[in-house]
Length: 240
Image (cartoon, rainbow, N blue to C red; front, top):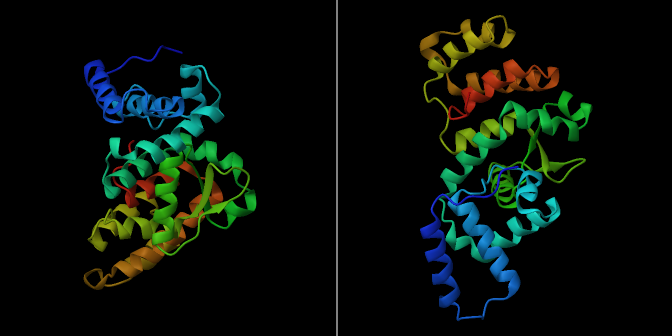
């Protein structure tokens, strides 16, 4: 595991000195200083927010539980140092958590029954990001569901679709979405039903129902390829 290296040592040092003097020399507790250093490391990018707690723990030579506490308490104490618009934060979080690798890791912590019911296991280790994502779920009228691990939230595909609608991530043209679905699932019953409709009269509600059904089936069958295509259609900024 390579050592931590600052991307901008001058900015890190300047901000650290400014804040420690602003509070009053020696007025910050040891815990305050720990949290400040950690937040500045994440802000610098020397530690990535997307890194797992275990990865960061190895680099800092502490326990994963310690890293989780630094992340949770650090943002509670020094959030103003890492300003991020809510919409931009949610897009960053979704792009990070809906990767095939992360979804595969999450499935180990959700029951087979939940998958068959259309629940996707989404793993978010960073407490601040988890809180933001949970709030997005609540804002669209759903409830975060946890099973074996509090870092894994089970989310139905239709909830993800509502989040995409709420934050305007979706392709606004239902005909364009249908064309994409034809490529992703050309033999699906849902696509065939859409194609029977007058294309000029196609409504977004029609496409939403098809997307929901296809998404639930993809989760239940654990067909990662098909699921990845549908998720990228709902969230176009997902990498790969």
